Length: 354
Image (cartoon, rainbow, N blue to C red; front, side, top):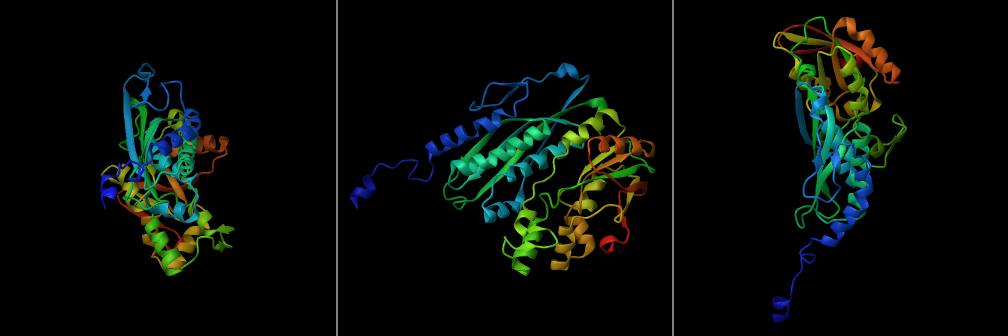
């Protein structure tokens, strides 16, 4: 008994392995450095990330920030033991949010909390973060990996992120210029993105009791592969439009779907009318509705239904915007219009029963 009481304990025996943390940093360094913009000062490993803002490029520079997580989609990463895509979800949820105000993402920071630190797994997550930062044009400026023994089960983790962007105040997109007659242009999603996964998991794994590797003919892939598809990144396709076209408003379709997100940008005297037959829907949405018996209005309030970003533009700018998207080989759809009203969303059309 006295030997146990008198034994000199270590942090590792308490569940925190500092050496594993250092190894994780070594494994992720190349991914982080690959994201650096010219404004980044210093290197990975400092107490704070340094970014030399060139404010002279802007007449009235405004910093725009956003933070978000991935939510219960993480369960799919655990079930599949695949961790190299979930980082894109964390980045996308943040940079897509600040983009709607016209902001160019400058840098991103991540926070990764684990029960037991596995360097290779952490490096895989961060590689996904870094690739998404590169694809969005922002630097992965720093982050934190916290080993929280006894707090998360071994093999599980949580990830959240924080993005900072910049926009010239005269060019901010606020929605205040939206008026009846404006047109809604929808940009396709890559699938479910990172919202509604509590309902998705209840449908697929509780009601239907599918295994994660169940092959779904309508999807031409396994269920797990479909559900883990990362959130689409919109900055590189939209920033050229923001700089060269007249855009009155932008909407990132995340939690709350169409009904809760679109009103966030509408003036008090405007509503929108959307024809749900005007864009193709990825088959996963029809399958979820069928498997779960979900009412269609609930589907459009929970999921993006195939539209991840909406641009609200004057009618005379529609052709210009869509042509420039086509020049980038990007698809777009005219999905509705702005009408007089009280910030309501009216869905019309025969597709999916709405």
